Image: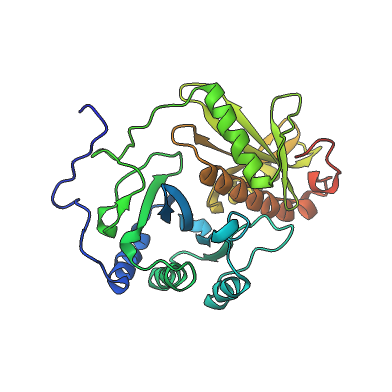
Length: 317
C-alpha cells in the first residue's frame, strides 16, 4: 500500500455520532481493561493542531497501572489551570505534583488488576469538568507500545492523533540524527524551562528531576533511539544477591530496567526516534526518575554503598 491515506474497515470506522460522555466512559473502561503490559494510551484535546490538555495511561502489569492528568508544569498562558481547577483535580482524587518531585503531572497509581471503570470515570470527569472539554469527539487518541509503535483503537469512537495503518504501524519518516538532536534539545528545554543545554564529555544531556540525576543520550542507528538513564549506586561489586535484587526489581517495574554496569547500578530505558515528541520524552524521564528513586531506596540500606543521590552534581541542566 502506498501513500499516507488510511481506509478503515466498517468495524474500524470512527464513530461520527455525537457520542455521550456516559457512552465514552464505558468504552474507555473497556479499552483500559484490555491494555497489555508495556502499552500506553493518551487522550488529548487539540487547538490549531497543538495539544492543549491530556490524560494518559500506562499499563505496567505487575508493576501497577498509572494515570496522569496534565498540570501547569506543561501549561502556560490562557491554557494554564487556575487554582480552582487545580483544587478540582485534587478533589477528584489526583495526587498533586509537588516541588522537587519527579512527578510533574497530577497522577494516580493502582495495583493490578486496577479498577478500570473507576479510572475511566476519573479521566472523564477531569476532561469534562476541569479541562472543559464539551464532547468526547473533541478528543483524539494515541495508542502505542513500549518502543513507540502505534496501533488503532477504533472501539474508543475517537479519531487517532495520526493515521495508523491496518497493521498498526504509523507511516512516519525516521528523523535524521541531526533532526533528532534538535528535537530532543527542544524537548529538554521545554521540560526544564531553560534556554541553553549543557552536555557532558560523552555528549549526554545531564538533567535533575527530583532527587534523581538523569542523562539523555541520542544513540545513532537504524533507527536512532533516545536513551534516558540514571545512575543510582556506585562502588558496587557484582554478586548473586545484587543480581537477584535487580531481577526482582525488573520483574515489578512498569517501565525501564535496573542493571549493574562496571561497578554501578543504573536504571535505563530507550524509545525509538520514530515519532518521538516532547510528551513522550517527558513521560520517559518521569518514569526513569521514579524508578531510580525506588531502586535507590531498596538498595541503599541493603548494600550500604554510596549513592549518586548523595553527591553534588558536577554538571547538570
